[in-house]
Image (cartoon, rainbow, N blue to C red; front, side):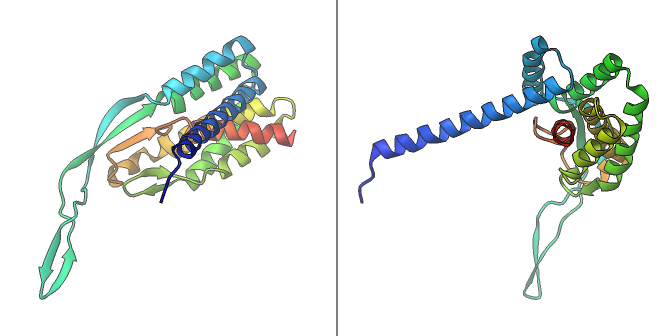
Length: 225
């Protein structure tokens, strides 16, 4: 069987072209979100760059002792093999993601100061805290997880109802701060029972957690308005 090297090279080139256009589409989408929430055009690139670089940075906050962590061990008894997880002491490193949590929260505070929407922003955030806290569930070995699409949709609906003109801003603030407080901060007490080696507030990348909730909420608010 003969394999044409040129075909293989073309396949690699095609893959990288797809990856390039995928990244460009996401970059433009995020730029659109930042423009819709009122970030000045000259600062959009800086905000995107800091978010991208910050997504690889997790700042450790504290170490939380774990109750037990399971190591796989097999024992044979009367011809039957049993898997026994022996208990051992361990810990979870609690960290905060710069691109996924710190920067979105700073942007939310900046937007509140810029627009003066403190009352409506607080209202959206309070509702989102209740929603995300209700949806967030502890998952063994993983951390705190929740459905990805419900919180942004709720934030967008509430924001459009409260202010048609400032709906994208309110959606971003509520989606960001509401998820941070409701899903992460209010569930800190459950982390010690999850057996996860690292629990990162805001996720391990730009497409997780708080960042994703805020971005999706803005896009939905733009569509609804």
